Image (cartoon, rainbow, N blue to C red; front, side, top):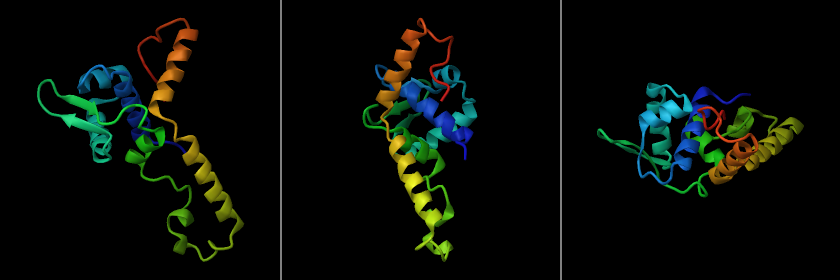
Length: 151
């Protein structure tokens, strides 16, 4: 299993916005250039993030994106699921009636435990991720040659 490009770009976008909190509205062009996200793809991702209530899309010549919650309130899991949908790992977790073995299957129990563990791991706030990035940057000697995140 692998995160799609849309999921990866959504994470990059939200991390950039979280790091730019002093700006009320962050220009789409700034997000696109800094995080190396194609502009048309960013617009589609932003629609999903807006539907999930994570950002507001501001129209107009000085328009762009505004986070609706603080970086402490938004988790990596929320960002990923806004674009990818809820994480299930296997169809039997999403639709238990799809498999007649779901009630007693040992593998089903392992899938459920793995899903719970993954969801817990991804429930880290964006603010914590920014702190990790800033710590690594300072250990690395400063700026990181252009990109804030390779999420």
